[in-house]
Image (cartoon, rainbow over all chains, first blue to last red; front, side, top):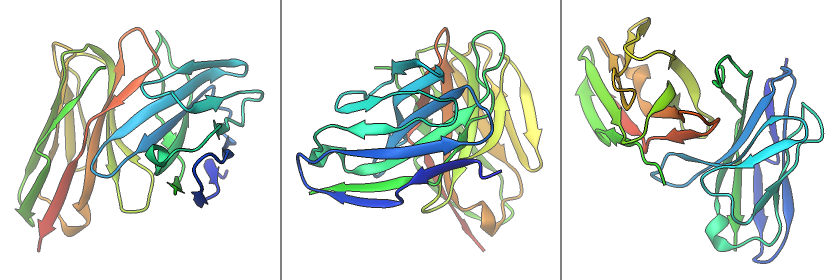
Length: 116
Length: 111
């Protein structure tokens, strides 16, 4: 099993450019999520999904789009990159537990994005 | 938005000492998770807590889910140099699938 994979590992964009950060998992997890981590801060939830075709907003969704066409993949799209989106982006996945909980979240290695 | 207050922000300790850190919030959580993050890596789960009052151990680590469901603590006993890193708490907000992370505790162990 590869676990949670993310591509690319590093990316530099110019303001206004668009791009997609890829995330894939091979553990058949229903729940997938995207976080951003800024220096000296914890992770903040951008978007999440509880299954194919179902997505919802997290804490900081503005400027980002997601879709979930398959269980395995959960891409994050930046439509028009801004310097404020310079950050490290982590994808995570887990099984859905009982009573509205999730199981252990497994994190990918991260994508380091710089917007000039 | 919801916030998780994690303290201390950083700590320097001698090898062999015990360490304690905690997270508090005004929100109620279904689940508490404690993670460790090494430089350039994603967070790795240390302990998961699912019930109020639950006390769980993982080797030298012990964590508890507060009775009020609004707080949690993590203890590390007999610290060793490889314990160095950033520790994060994360809580799953009650009634949602949303996780809120603390701002982290940076631990440095002096040999």
